[in-house]
Length: 259
Length: 302
Image 1 (cartoon, rainbow over the protein chains, first blue to last red):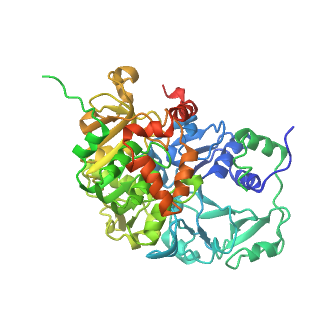
Image 2 (cartoon, helix red, strand yellow):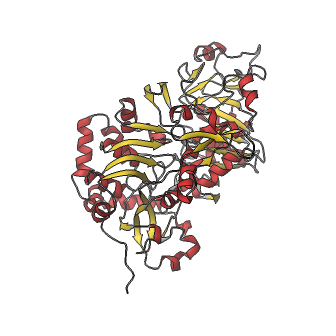
C-alpha cells in the first residue's frame, strides 16, 4: 500500500505526465526534477514508448533509479543511451525531432514567452538571473510545456522584461508571420492550476484548478488578464497507479518534498 | 630519442602555459560536474588575469570562484548558477554592480562557436527562430546577421570561439595527454579542439590507457594537450563522472560564505590562496572524499 496523500509538486508531475503521449520524444534542461519524474512515470504507465533526454547529460531515457537533483549527474547516465552535448544541440535545432520541450523562467508572460536572464533592464537589472541555456530552441519544438513552482504576479506577468525563450511572441500576428517549425506553448503547470492558450488570441487560459484552489485565487496571483472560461474543471487528483509509478521513480521524495 | 612526458605539477603547468594576462580562457565542466577546480585554484593563486572567460553552456563554481577572485574582466556564458542550490552569488553581484562585462549568449552559441573555432570555420549559421530572443540585441558583436546564399533569407550567425588556453578535467590520461571522459563530455572536447593551449587535469595517469579501454574510447588525442596534471579529487567540490559525486555540503558552505566579504575572504584563505593545491585534499579530509568516491563510483562505465 502506498500513502495516498500527495504533494502539489506530485500533482504537477501528474498533470505533465497526462499531457505526454506514447511514442513522443521530450527534452528538458537544468533543475528538471518534476518533468523528469513525469516522463519516467509516463513510461511506466501509459506511454512505454515515450523517449526523453535529460539535456546537459545527454542521457536518453534515464532509468531514474532513483531520481536525483542535478540534470548532469552521472546517475542519469544509468540510461538506454548517452549523447554528447553537441548532438543534443543538433537534435534541438532540427525542428522535427522533439515533440515536447519543457521550459520555464523567472518570468513567464501572457503569450508564453519565458525569461531566464534578468528582472528589469538588461543593462541595469534589479535581479540578474542565471542565463538562458537552451530556451531559445522553444520555437523549434513541437509543443512547449512551461512550468513554475511559484505562481505569483511577479512571475506570471504581462510582458517579460527580457525574452530568452520565445512563446507566441507579441501575439497571433507576430507568431503567424514567423512561420516557425514548432507549435508554440501548449500547457502551463503551476502549483495552483493548469493553463493552456486561447486559439484565437494566443493568451494564456485557465484550464483546470487544482483541488481547493479558486478562480479568484488564480486571478489575484497572476499579473495579467487570463482568459477564464465559463466553467473551469478541477484537476483530477493523482490516481493510485500514478502515485505508485511516481514513488517508484522518486522513493526519497525529491519531487514530493519540493512543494 | 625518448618520447617526452607531459606530466608536471599543477604549479608548473599554470606557470608555464598560462600567460600572466590570458586573452581568452575556457573552463570546462558543466553544472556541478567535471569542473577543473585544481587548475582554477592554481590560476587564482598565481594571480593570472583573464581578459575573457568562456564557459560551457552551464557554468557553476568554476566561473563563480574566478569572478570572486576579481581576475576576470569579461565573461561569455549562457548560464552561471548552482542548479537546485540557487543562483551564483559572485556572478550575480558582478553583473548587477557592473564590475564585469557580460557577453550574453545562449547554449547553441557556445556549441556552434567552439565548433567554428575548432574547425577554422568563419561562423556557424543558426537555425531559424533562435533570432527571436532579445540576446542578439544585447550582444550584436558576436551575433551578426548575413544572407543565406541558398534561400536569400536573413540568417543569424555565431562567431567562432578560439580560446588561448583551456582548463579541462578528464578522468584518465596517459603521460602524453591522450585522455578519456568516463561519463559525460559536455562541451569539453570541443573546448580542447578549439583552444591553442590545453592544460589537462586528471584523476589518474594510466600509462597503457588505450590498452585498458581500446583506442576508440580514447577520444582526446595527446597532441592537442600541453600539460597533464595528476590531481586526484581535483574537481572537488564538484563531481568527477565515474569517480566521485559532488560535495553538496561544501557547495552550500561556499554559497553561504559569499553572503559577506569577511566570510568569503576566509573561504579563499582556507581553500585557495592560503594553501597549496597539494594540501587541498587534506583540508577537505580524505575520509570525506573517499565516501564521495564510494557514492560516485559508477562501475558500469568500465
